[in-house]
Length: 401
Image (tube, rainbow, N blue to C red):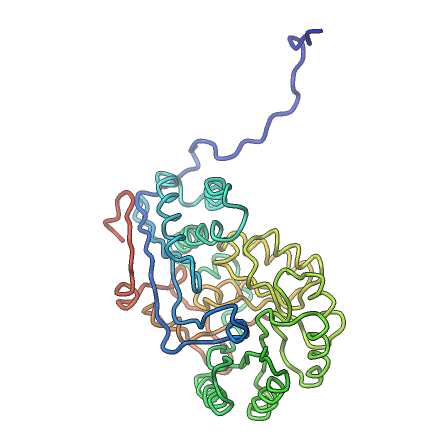
């Protein structure tokens, strides 16, 4: 039997996305420059995964930098990163997708994020694909805030002009107790409000000795956190957490595998010490799943890893609804803008090794970091970062970059 469709009509229309430019379009991207920067660390860093042989010591970090300009003269810069591996791959992917947004209105950030996402859809929804998109997304947000003459956090809607800050760099596992104390003293002299200690030693008693030594050394009004870097199983993490519960730690970070949402939720229910995790997640979907499971008291989502500022803002809105605190991971020059736009009092993580990449420095005092007053992210690449650039490609007209 032949079906007669002549008198049948579909009553609804399929959703349209990525439609042609209309009267509301006011600008167009005319140039993009993509750079791969390999920034060395002054000293190798080792966490729990290094001691178990799963990772090598961290000796450098790779940045993917995207600089953009438009036909009206607006410019913006964004970046993403990877540790230990993947830098050349991110650079190659960025060069492949960059030409596909030339000519687009840079104000249409959400639409361009979706366009780039569908270019890399075969690579999966997350991982390196989204981390590469993050550099473009951040450059567009930087451009929009610069065009408005506002710091990014003011464009987003700030709740505060300064944020609590803690340092993580001097207390890795390769450091002795004396070195940990000395590094903490240097951080406190610079105005840090908290110190985070790496844990996850093969001998748990050594972790406890180091925790006791640092907590005794620090003033009572200085926060202390510990970070296990996904080292433990549920049974060990619960036992360890109960032992340190009475110390008043600000949080225990990544006690379990990053994707063990249910296990982190169990610890959050059982322990008085807040559970912090989320830095390794690379998509909004995973971030939402973690929070729905009750898997964190403190969400540590990382804007470059999660796909950029656009998905981070969506994760932040979900966290606000659930009254989850946030302490964004790494990249403090970017994360301070996002943390300052969060309803509840956040933390920002500080690393000295990130500072040489940019000309500007964050202002830190009395345990807090000030949000920069410069437009956009308020950042420019340093001469050192230009010297550390191992690959660079340009697309379109870049005369103003």
